[in-house]
Each structure stands twice: as structure tokens, then as C-alpha cells.
Length: 293
Image (tube, rainbow, N blue to C red; front, side):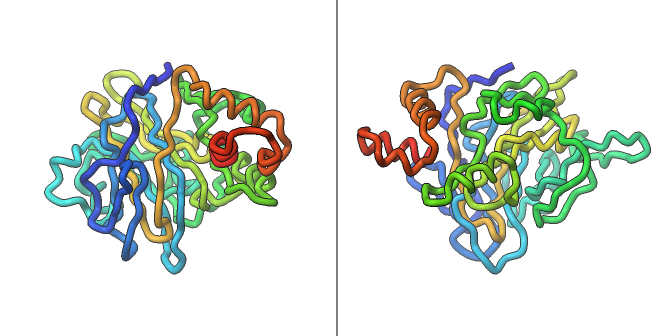
């Protein structure tokens, strides 16, 4: 299954009191304090549709990082946007949200380990984790094609097919950007580093339920919650919390790539370093697009 999105992804106009959106509604910045940074997707997600963001800026001096997940609560029905996504929003029920780390949502296959029952029938998987981005043990679920990680054009999660082109973060162009880009591709950097790209989606299952998956720099981290009721609208939740200062939405092309995207892919394929784009006889706008996307 492949989700074909015909809507431009934006943040909802209802959000935490410390959040400011840009004119396009695609960038959210927490302007003060460390909390009241909860944001929602403007529209409910379709099955298999990823809500992808990139971390634009960090703020030193705070403990904790980005939190992300899903909610079946329409933002318009909230009396007030909770100060924290965890535990305030999750305690309201019908919300499944995690602090972004690599070990917070491993699927537990050990029959001796019980799964925690989540709200509204959803089951939270894994033991939870701190917000230090530590590496967990065990195999990551969902994407079972590690040998072709660098060559596959799509990420496969169960029966969902997502274009990989926009999923991996990229450093700003510079002398060492080719080295940093490899670190993003191999997921060697902390998951909440600047320029990291993190997405959330749900995969439909039987009997009107689904599994929530979090994707970090093109790698599926496994099912974070199971049994999420998908018969009602499901919104993405992004909590611009603590050390995470600013995030922006990355638009994903599900159908045929645009001519602009195809040109960018061909150019990037035939250069050894992004800074080499400056030497090409191309329009400045195209050079900028190839270096920064």
C-alpha cells in the first residue's frame, strides 16, 4: 500500500501557547520556556501517510528533547492545549506519544514480558526510555531490508511503501558536509540532532486497528503502539520540548516525482560533494535546491 497525499502538510492553528508558526504553517518555533510547545497536524493522517519533520534548531540548557506521536483527539475539541504531551495529553486518553530515542519503542517478542495497555485499547510496546538517544539492543522492527538500506528507493513498513528520498536528514553544505551526511544515513548521530528527520505514521491492521511507527532518518524504529483505533480521525502530535527549539515539516512526494526532484536526483548522483554544485553552470535557484534538499 502506498499513501497518495493530495494535501499540503501544515501544523494546526491550535497549538501550545509558546509556539509560533511561520507564514506557511510548516515551521514551529518555541519562543520561550521549555514547555507549552505541543503542535498537531492540520489534517488527520491517512493510513500509511507519514508526518515528517526536520529539527531546525536546538536550545542549550534544557534537559529533554522532541516528543512525537499520534492522537485521536481533534485539537478543536480541547478546552486548552496541554502544557506537556507527556503526561498531560496522554493522560486524557486516545493519545500515543513518545520521547524520541532509539530504544523507546522496541517490539517485545519475549512472551514472558507483558505489554502495557495503552489508552483506548492501544498497547504501548517496549520498556520506555530516557531522552538521551541511547542505543538499544535487539533488532529494529518494520523495515526488514538492511542489506539494501542505501539502495532502496522506498522504505517498506509492513504493506506501506514510503519514498526514501526525503526521509534522511542532511547537514548544511560545507567542507565536511559529505562526512556528516553519511552519519545521518547510517543513523550514527543522536536522533534529535540538528537536521535529523523524524516521522510518525500508522499502519492499518485488522478489525479497524493500526500500529504506530516512528521513523528516524529513514529507518523504521518498529511499532511503538499497537491496537490504535483507526475508525476515527488520527492526528500527528509534535511536542517542541526542552532542547528542541524549532522544527519544520518536510513534504513527501508519494506519486510520480516532480521534474524538479528528478533533476535534483540526477545532479546529486553525479557529484562527489555537494559544494561541487557551485562549479556547475546551472541557475542559482537550482543550485540552492540541490544543495539544501
